[in-house]
Figure 1 (spheres, rainbow, N blue to C red):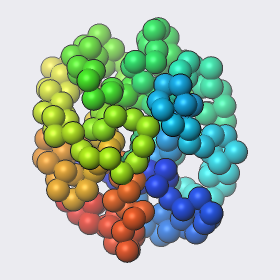
Figure 2: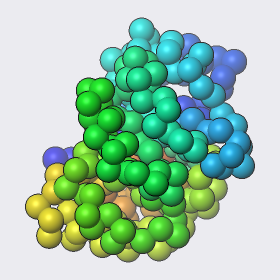
Figure 3: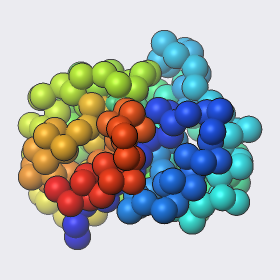
Length: 216
Ligand code: DX5
Ligand code: ZN
């Protein structure tokens, strides 16, 4: 499978959201990545259901929801109702991760678990077989436009080995500081999905930038 590209709406122009969604619809983007923050789990607040609930009417791209919130299990039914294909919860936010993952799948979504940069991949040893995706943060979550943490490339390699060793099927998604240079390293290391926010939306021609990320 060639890799997928999931532009992160966090870096879009929110006064022109309709135009931004139309741009993504015209582009080769595979998914739309949606960053929900609560100001508690991460030091920032983004957008929530008023935005999320509008999207499924406006796009056929898969919605990939990344919850940077405490107690993400509280919102599983609402995220499902918003049309999310993937619901990603942070490992660091879930005491009963196996239960949360099961609930996500019971609501008809694919389950993703996200790791902060400091969280070792090997902590997923006993859950990776139950996952549809692992989302590796390559910046500290909370803001777009940050510098890529190089060690993330090695984490992709370690995760790929774990997935193969466990005969698991989880996709590897990477989020934070992705551009053509870091994206290439990640794909070569085994990443399946690249999230890109600032690199896409701050570029002169986002459709072309998405094309370049797809062509890595
Ligand atoms: C950061 C978010 C990312 C963010 C990525 O907390 O999870 O999805 O939008 O932005 P860039 O690609 O600009 O680092
Ligand atoms: Zn994200």
